[in-house]
Length: 270
Image (cartoon, rainbow, N blue to C red):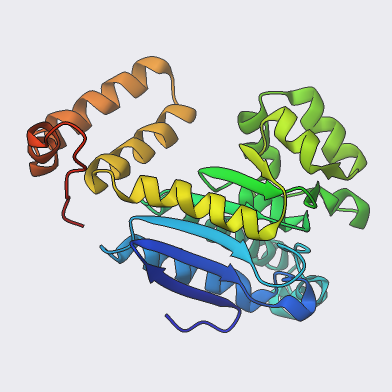
């Protein structure tokens, strides 16, 4: 898949989506916002891609939203009617939210591999991933407060559910302070910290490769159930998974897994 600000490839059933503006610290310009959604819509639609790894080219994962995008918003949304100008801005924000939600909509698990800086919009982005891993040099900051704005594309909604602490999220959001890799691991933002970028990429690929051996239908269902359960009651989640398994449980994947010999990895269709 050819994109201007990302590279996308599939190898051994693992899709790699790489932010690719290294000269700009992978700052998220208008084109990148469009490309992210295109990339994950594409991954979702490709049967041979069973899991995705999201990473960044160069010294940093991402410096967050490109300020040039912010500066260019005024002419894009301007209307002689003040109400319509504000409506236009709301539509832009909703569209940017939808871009990041494409990671959650993608039926395949998304593993974020973070090195260097992950600030501002980068936090919004990784909060949409299924799991997050980082190198020891990684650092994180909810930077929007330092440019006089409220983070509006997901961090304030998703991060409390990831780390389970309203107080800590509020501290990070109100101060914009830098959080290092060790603290990110301690609070549960990342699952694991690797010594360096090469170890990070190798470790995340090993996890992705393990996921890629599992039943694709079951992985897709598991992601869907976890996302649903996060935003609904336990009773609603139980009802939802009962409906899913009533529809999908009796699959060829179940038969192959049950018929596989001890110690044998069953082969599943994409």
